[in-house]
Amino acid sequence: MNVWHQDDTFWEGAAQFIFSRSCCGQVPKDVDCALALLELPPGATVLDLPCGQGRHSLEFTRRGYRVTGADRTACYLAEARRKAEKESLEVEWIEADMRAFRRESTYAAVVNLFTSFGYFQDAADDVRVAEHFFASLKPGGRLLMDLMGKEVLARIFQEREWHQRDDGTLFLEERKVSQNWNWIDVRWIAVSGTERREYRFAHRLYSAGELVPLLTGVGFGPVTVFGSLKGAPYDDKAQRLVILAQKPE
Image 1 (cartoon, rainbow, N blue to C red):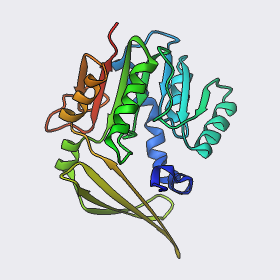
Image 2: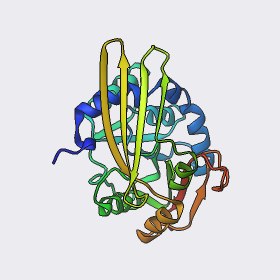
Image 3: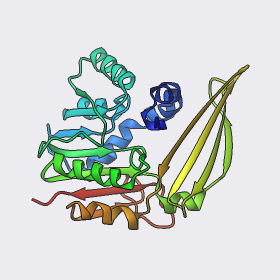
């Protein structure tokens, strides 16, 4: 069955909304925060998985880190390569599914950002991805994850909302939670003039109390939870679910 995360037409069409100008503009600040949490030494090896069009991979590279960006979507990697070449940045780009990619004891840090975890209908696939994160890290290496946590979403949840983008496109989003708050289905509708485009995707929702045991179960420890990339507490004011997990020495 061809599910949404294996559909290139979805990723190609939705790219302009996933990689919006505002999101891309936030990247330098996000990497500042990520580096503060990861405490990486200069020139350390970093795996960005999945990397999308490479916006975080490129920023880590600008800071002097040796970066591998891996993603299953060829058109995103082509755009990442184009941007890297334009700036004469050396990044290793790998086309690979996150359920398959691993390099034993290679990286000082693995970053998984922008709610890029939980895509798969079989929860065992999420465990497999976490196992690959763990295996790919050097002893003492750290994993940084940034998701929309279940607790945060429950606090701010809206079934429907819309806004007008800078280019005049009317953008509507519809959300439906199911499976006892374990799953969310999302529909995007973009209307520009007489053109109407629709995109559907879905993913598993994780609370901190669910994700931490998943990570400790594959070997991580200690695992620390934050409410933002700035390191805020994961409490009733949390904006994101941010996980910092270490592979034991």
